[in-house]
Every structure is written in C-alpha cells, then in structure tokens.
Length: 206
Image (tube, rainbow, N blue to C red; front, top):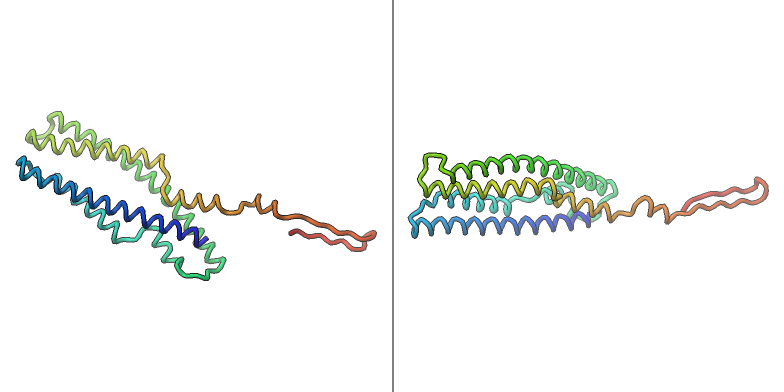
C-alpha cells in the first residue's frame, strides 16, 4: 500500500516540476516577446508582460508548494517504515477521498473553464470586429489574446470532463493491482473429515 502510494507521490512531483518549469519558461518567453515588440515595433508590451508574468508566477508557486499527494504522504508519515495495518487502511481511505475530490474538482473546473472560455472567445471576436474604444493596434493585440485564451479554456473545459485526473488514475491502478475477493477465493479449499457414524466430524477452510 505505502509502496504504491510512494510511486504516485514521485509521479506527481515529477509532473509538477515539469509543468512549473515549462510555465516559467513560456512566461519568460512571452515577456521577452513583449519587450522586443516594444523596442522594435513600437508596440505596448503591457499585455505580453501581464500574461507572461502570470505564467511565471504560477510556475514559481508550483515549484515552491507541495502537491496534494505530497501533503497526504507527510500527514500520514508515508516516508517512515514499519506501518501497521490500521495505518495502511487509513492512508488507503485518505487516498480514495483524494481521488474522489479530484474527480469533483475537475468537473467543476471544467464547467468554469467552459463558461470563461466562451466569454473569452466572445470578447476576443468582438474586439477584433471593432467593438470598443481602442486603437487598431490595441484591438488586434487584446482581441487575439482574449480569443486565444478563450479557446484554450474551452479545450481545457472539455478535457476536464473527458480526462481523468492523476489522482484518479493512480488510485484505480492501485485498486486493479489488489488481489480481488474472487482470486482470493480460488486459493481456498474446504475439507471435511468424518470417521464412523457420528464419531469425528472436522471441517475447515484454507
């Protein structure tokens, strides 16, 4: 039980590190593009700096804060050896609750992403078609950003309903690897030994 959970914790840490570093790299590149446009094309770098700064900040938070699996492992002392069966059952139940919470959160996040994405697509399309008191340059920049962000949120919202979270996948894999009641039953057999007429009658199961 604890070994299987340790594998999941390591997987979560790797994915969190990769995602955080990727977010910081993309954010830094976005800010650099904004600065280059400001210097060479005389365009405002503000939208690029805002989006890039948010990406860098999100990546930094991901690097500094532990993930849900790591927090659960710390609270149950998963890194310490010599656990009792009751401690294993407690961690298993907590892992199940974590998977159920992740399932609910991804569905709620999916709905929110779809709503925000639809709004972003609408705002972006409106800006690009001339709505708003903006210059042509500002309209193209903000409209493109809103349209792209909205489309990305729509895709993320659909993914929230279709793709299972890592917590769900890991727990389902752990459950699939457990000996089932049926397989355990196949390893048992009954015996009965009788002697005489009502003399000795022994029965048991192994």
